[in-house]
Length: 257
Ligand code: PEP
Image 1 (cartoon, protein in one colour):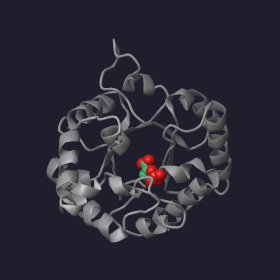
Image 2 (cartoon, rainbow, N blue to C red):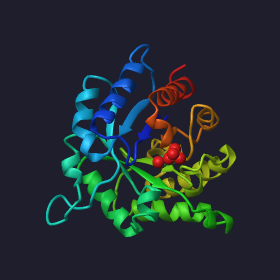
Image 3 (cartoon, helix red, strand yellow):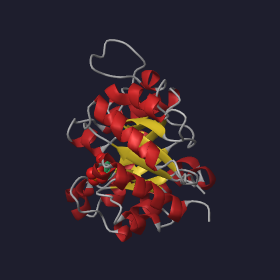
């Protein structure tokens, strides 16, 4: 079975003090009893990575970055390299819909970033998913497959990869996709593309998460599906109580019996 994850994407929210307080609340809330069988990952803004690393030190909580550039160093003003992040983080979110659609990142750049992240020893949480227009055209599966194929073209092995299926129309809208619509993609297009690329055995170990308006009330509906190994959570991860509930539900539903 692939590992299960609950990932909090804080986006461009929280100053340093607030980030440390949120991380500490999550840490305290998960201390006893410690949830089993779920990897908890929090992704604060870059400037809070170091203080949050201190705040969660000695706990099982892992740190992720929300983005990284494709080059190790150089004249790239404003960018952060995966090598720099590797001192703090185990994971990095790449290809998030806000990077694709708000910042204009194209699939070629996301592919370069994915290769660079793996080379630096980070585990990419590769986000894929269709827009509403693409869904309405009946292209959700084809778009998702293409995004995976392009992003992973230079990544020779599946070890360490995490895929997050995040239909763009479900992110931050308060309207999640239905579990049936998600399973159609997670069990179909995503697994098929991974299996074509890496073979059945290796690809079956890649966790596939759902993201898009996940909260403690709806997360169980997704976690009960065998093709979904956890959640990538935006808004609800800024509330320690809600995120803790999501982590605990993930452990209850996906963890050891
Ligand atoms: C996200 O940021 O990846 C996300 C899914 O956001 P939200 O949970 O707020 O929809």
